[in-house]
Image 1: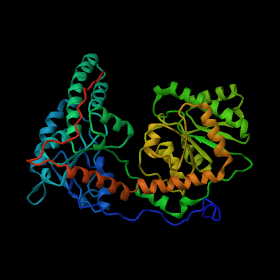
Image 2 (image 1 turned 120 degrees about the vertical axis):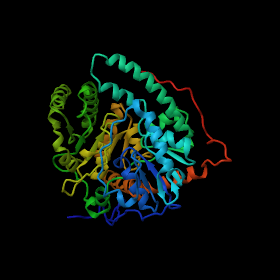
Image 3 (image 1 turned 30 degrees about the vertical axis):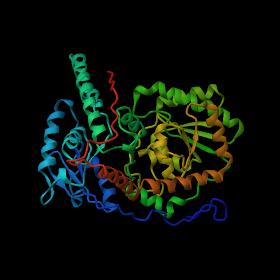
Image 4 (image 1 turned 60 degrees about the horizontal axis):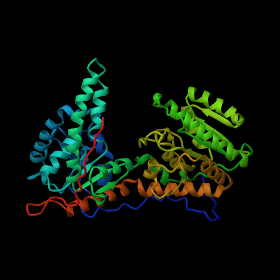
Length: 460
């Protein structure tokens, strides 16, 4: 039966939807999203349309798609980018921007602004358009590594060396784009740091998260997300650690061993205080063997359990506290989270985001990926990354405080609705576009202010 939590207590809240009211952008921006594929920008353009903007998608083929075409068009998979043809793509993008009309008599280059999502489009835009936003989601020189790694022939060493010089030149070229765009949008703290290292002024760099899917938001806004957290029972307090073993990276076995050792040492400490605590770890077969070996050595094997990946959804539903270790967890991939059940299926997300959606108390390492999710710690409790004693003390603290666990889950729900809904994300883009439009270049204005070119060191 669905019910509100602690209806008469200090942490009471209403079971009604808390989805924010639809906001309106400061103006109906005609924003041209120049990108390699529609799939690449679909979440952003749909968020902008929700708040009253007029986004267009400009493809490499020179097609200009209006909002009505975003979902009806077949979404092609993004194509691999090669540095070897990037400059040719710059010329193609210049032609697209100058010749493709978004409205009668208005070429794409003369729209309110151009939002470039790839290097070639960004270079063409900053050289030909008055107001440009550059989406910095991947450094251009990383393409050289990918390209070199895909050629496993006898000349791979020479090819890699040549590509390193090519990548160096493109890294310098991308620095030009970053420092001449009116604003740079990033989606992770690590990319923000990279933009600043390349000379971007801090006030020109904006970090915006991708919006959650409509299905997830409907779940969070509905009463089914308010099912009370598990109460303490005779079987004890259940802790679940989903990201100890790196499922997709066989080369990271050493990191998985370090994660296991760290987590088990902390669990051995907090179980001295919370004798009913049990720890479940999502693990591969190899990790499960290591987990058993180390748990036996620490005398806690009877209270530590390995679970396969296909049990992730069940464990999120049955746990009291989810432990997210941080940088070693998989990157968030905001896709559909539902598998026909009333509980979210968090294995499509990072462990931290999955815990917030599933309505479980989150104990997270204070790391950059978790700061991206909740910069001020709303809806979670931090522990110092790598500090066994700190993790143990905070886990024991959560085990003793069920009201706090429920309050964290409720706050996490509000935080996601307020920051990751299309309305919220659309308003964040509106602020970026206001910033850029106010500083747009005209024939009589000097180049963009705030450029702080730094010597660029690219090592390979």
